[in-house]
Each structure stands twice: as structure tokens, then as C-alpha cells.
Length: 493
Image (cartoon, rainbow, N blue to C red; front, top):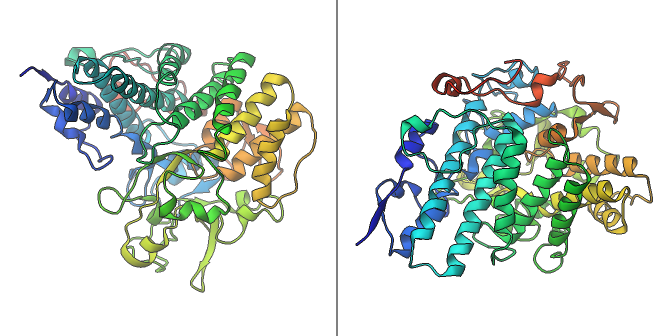
């Protein structure tokens, strides 16, 4: 019986990790021994392993009440962590290469990349797979590798380009490759290959679907069009094309929920407007954001800890348009519960009522892409590509405004429409890990006090800290600098 040996052991040494969470109730740690090339279960296990790190975007980290999502939200200046140990370092922009979260993202994202590299090498050796099975499996793997690298380049800039499994420790010292090279050699080719697969537009188990592939590709091209690559009009057009394909699935595959509170109904996971989500359940892995976003020690839940680790800023909430439904009580935010005033606004997007009231085990998924995100991608990209908003772009924005019970916008110039799209991204996608990346690609920041868009460099946030060039990229973690002599630190750190 022919078998193969995997390289996961060296992979874990290189990333400094020994194991990670389950996905879809399977344990990728079983791949550290040998795999039977005639076993469909072994092939499936390779594919399952690529999802093990997807929860890096929303995982416990950084001490009591910490979560990796908090890093991106603290950086925007739209949130703070009342009880989170190092929140002030990100609010005040005094973080460094040893600060919380910086290392967690690097480790887990690269572990995800390396798991994908192993799967890409080994899956074609399984003769048991049909051509379509193999192509679909490879599409899943390539999509997830693109996903992990997309986060890496946006967060750290130039990073090592690793497209093969790590076989020995001598291979781990790699220099950084330019951002554009990683887009052109890994991220975009992987996604173009994946979109030629036969994967369905939606998969109810939460695995890679065509909806996710197209949404991610739309996001990649939109980011590629902006800073730092500045790919321009051609990239905006590609983004518009992919997001339009998703929008063409409205009414059949994807639909806006009638109510915002539909998003906190666990029965709606992987349905409606949800395109791709981090999977949680009550048994294997619960959503850590529910207790993180509760008021500190408020005593309103059965959780043993109510962290207050991620809290919206009042300046941001007050910057919503008057009568915007999203800013009303128990829509996106909450100020009282069961008759108790909470002393301020708290995030309601992960308020799982059953977990809060009964079992302290939230099964709400965390959304990486949902339909309003892609609608706004289309509006922004098509506006840029065509020099002004077309009727579908206006319709997309107005549909989002209508759900918020706001009046529609009419005809306007390209620049004014772009700012309206940015506004809706701020207000619709807040505290979902989106705004920081929008700030980086546009080099603009919405000033919550004035309602205007400031240049990123020179913008002073509500904590009286001013963004500089150094803040456009996170530092390479000190531990990585210590073990890889080929790395050069980002300027200013």
C-alpha cells in the first residue's frame, strides 16, 4: 500500500505553532503521520486542513479579553478596549514588533499558507480522485492560500513568497518579496484558477464556494487598484466584473436579510446575505466575540467573564446620519438589556441571546464576506472604472440605504459618489475587520467629528494620535526577525 509522508511537522516548527482549532469537526493534526494515496478520507483530510487557520481573523489573543479582530478595530480609531491590556498602544499608535496580536496573525496566516502548499503538492497524487474532484479540491486550496496571503500583504507589506512545502529547516530563511509580486504570482493566479472550477455558488457547510471565490477576487482587484500597488482602471474593472457576478446571484443564491437582527440568529448561518463565514458551533468551537463585546462585569449574562474588550467609540456612533436604523437600539449597537442601562454603546453584532441567557456557548458565525460588502465593492469599482456611477451602482447603494431607512441618493459626480460608498462601508461593515483595510487602500480616513475624509498620513484620531507613514504596515514580529536573518524590518519599527 503506497503512502506519503507529510511535512506538517517542519511547517509547525517554522511558524512556532503546535496545533490549531478544528474546522467542520475534523482534526488536521492527523496529517502529521502518513496518508494512504488510495484513501478518499485522506484526500479529504488534506482539504480540511487548509481551513484550520481561517479563524485567525477572530481568535482569542492578547491576554484577558483579547481577540485578533480587535487589532484591526483599535487601529481605525473607531473602537477601544476598556478592559483590554494593550488597547491603548494601538489607539495611541505606540505599538511595536512585540505588541499583542502582531505575532499571532503572522504565525497563523503563514501556517495556513504552508498547509495549502502541502495540499497542493499532495492532492494530485491521489489516483482515487476523479478529475472534477481533484479540480474542485485544488480550487478550495488555492482560494484559501490566496486568502491567507491577501491578509499578509495588506498587514505587513512585503513578505516571504512561499509556494512549496517546507522540507527542512534550512528552507525557512527567506527574504521578503514585493507586494505586487505576491499578488501577481500567487494571489491573483490562484483565484483565477479557482474560478474556473465547478464549485457551487453557496455551500451550506461553510467551505469555499464560487460566491467566496468571486467576492475575494473582487476585493483583491479593488485593493490592487488602490495603494500600494496602484493597479488603476483595469483592476477596478476586474473588481466590478467579479462583484457583478455575485450581484447577479441576488434573488436566487444570496439575499439581503429583511432585518439586521436576522444576522444574530444562529439558524441563518451560511444563508441569506452571508457569503463566507468563520464557522462556530456549541461543541467544537464557540464564537469568542460574544463575551468580548459584552460590558465589563455587567452581570447581564451567564458568561463567567464579560470582557468589554472591544467597544465602539461614541464619536463613531454619533457620526451616523440622523434616523439611520443601524444606530438605533439593538440593531448594530446595544445600550440596555433587560431593563438595565449599560452606561454606553456596545456592539450587538455578536449578541447571541441563547449564549448570553442560557449556556455561554455562542454558535454565531463570523462573516468574512456578506452581500452588502460586495454590493459596495461593485459600486466603488464600477464608479472608478466608468468615471461615474451607473444605474446598478446607484441601486446597490440605495438598497443598503433603504434597509437603514434612509432616503435614496440621486445622480452625483464620481468623487461625491465614491465618498457616499465609503460612508456606507463605514456604517454597514463596522467592527467586521473591514475599515482598516479600506483606510490602507484608499489612504483616506473618515473624520468622525467633521464627516470629511482626511489623508491617512496626518490624520489625528480621537485619541489625539496622528497617523504617519510607518502606520501603513504592521511591524514584522520580533520573533520572526530573530529567527530569519533574511528579513528586513518595516520602516519606523
